Length: 143
Image (tube, rainbow, N blue to C red):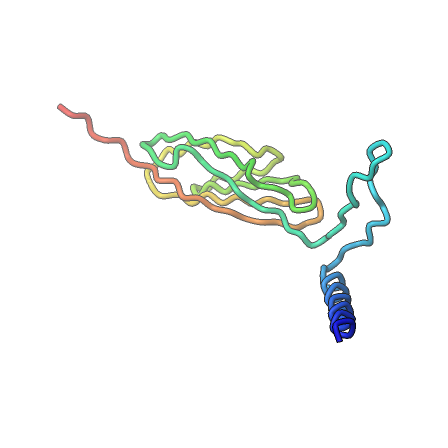
């Protein structure tokens, strides 16, 4: 009886493993292994549908006009590729696009601005993130 139960568990386990492996998506068989000397390092990953992640912070997040902020998108990553383009929309009509993850911007007018970051990787996949910046007007001098 114990042998029969063990056999059933083995067959069910094998079916589950096959179902899990076939459901992983567009994954090429790891025939290409990268090597470091005589030891195998890791299989070459070619999972094509992993999007990049957009993440950034801007400091300071509020202050009096003119307010210069520094935005850093080094928290972004390219999924299974690298990020080739950072697109910034500062919410005041200014936009910049390039390969730099860190950028400065100056707000000259009071208001609440939503900064949008768009990251893209060479395969065409992209992701976005946003952060609000509050710019105050200049205070009247105290007499």
